[in-house]
Amino acid sequence: MGTTGPSSINEQENVQYGMKFPIFTIKDMVNLQLALIDSLEIDQLFSVVGGSMGGMQALEWASSYPERVYSAIPIATSYRHSAQNIAFHEVGRQAIMNDPNWQQGNYYNKEVKPRHGLSVARMIAHITYLSEGAFQEKFGRDMQSKVLSWGFDADFQVESYLRHQGISFVDRFDANSYLYITRAMDYFDLSHSYDGDLSAAFKNTKCKIMIVSFTSDWLFPSSESLAIVKALNKTAADVSFIEVASDKGHDSFLLEVKDFYEILSGFISGAARKKGI
Amino acid sequence: MLNQLNKKLISSLIMNNAKVLDIGCGNGELLYHLEKTKSINGQGIEISPKGVKESVSKGLSVIQGDADIDLVNFPDNTFDVVILSHTLQATHKPREVLIEMLRIGKKCIISIPNFGYWKYRIQMLFFGIMPITRTLSEPWYSTQNIHLCTIKDFINMCESLNVSINEAFRNTTYSIKKINKPNSYMNNLLSIEGIFVLSNNIN
Image (cartoon, rainbow over all chains, first blue to last red; front, side, top):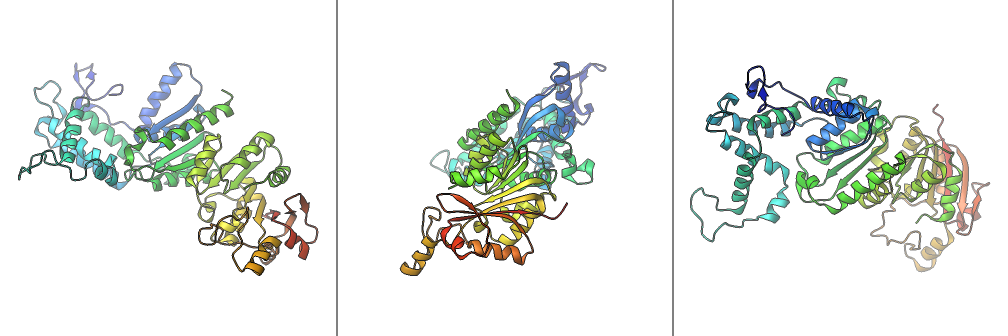
């Protein structure tokens, strides 16, 4: 996942970093991307597009390096992680760190890994990515088989689905990375360096910004996006905002929601026309 | 909705390269026209997601928002021109919206459907029903136009707010004429639309 992380080899000690890996922030991620475009000798990116944590990066770009981005599309995101979002992350991290196989993060060369912890963290997170309506529509009270187990097996399809989501995540994601990345999101607060004045964070931006939220997204609700729009209006920035109707929750930004695609392509082609591309 | 005469007049009132806010920009038709013909730097506010979607798809910068609520977010004198075309009658607090417009725009262009138009009066007088025409096409129970007024009403409101009207025009459906006598009975009777240019006194 990504470039260098806790599972990378610390060359000085010839062993994985684990918890010795430094804490990093959303701004660090953006600085890394900046170093990349510098080395590629790209003066200005035409558009930085991202959803959720990617949206935080898009906002960071527009705020910190406004002259290096022509347009930005932060989707289903916020300028700072809310208390509820931090709370969900904390439960996920506790699940990992309380898995005895986590071993203070030194599991890389061991037989067992904190699979249960990471899997539970993913199950919790997955609930926050959907909406009540999406769950109800997809599963309702549908059963795995016609008879109840009268026990704690996955009787309901929703249980089996979540377990599957959790288990399949473990194979492609490092538990320590999960801790670090969720922490980066928790620490993100664009207004922090400006005494809580978000509009000051966008004071110099000439970037064309389009903010998108989804009606059923309760993890990054539209009110979060509106706070950004308000701050951008205060600086008279070039901003568009739309709340797309979707019942698929936070995950909408990853799914084929028709209106969403049309808006994205409309905005991008409009920006390209203005830029003369 | 927005006829060609109205579009032409509004366009003639806007200088090249101006920073323009269109409140209630609908599908962005006017802003798009102004960007093409006057190279304006345009921004729109539109309440309906469909309108925002169509506007953004034209490459316009439009936020989904509400004239009654969202104007307070803009600093004083942000825009050279603020346009409110056929929207004032759909706001909850037209007076407050007007005051906010004058704060954020150096020049304001407001057009309103004139409820004093003879066709509306006839429907009321002879048929005893709320008027329905091509411009005001929705029946009373589903219309968004909750604060309809006449040209005379609008002028009176400006007077009560001590706002001076720099220029006023009326749309007879065939042509647009300048209003020279604000209190003219005939102007109010024969015009389907009134268009007003106001400017703020904040510098």
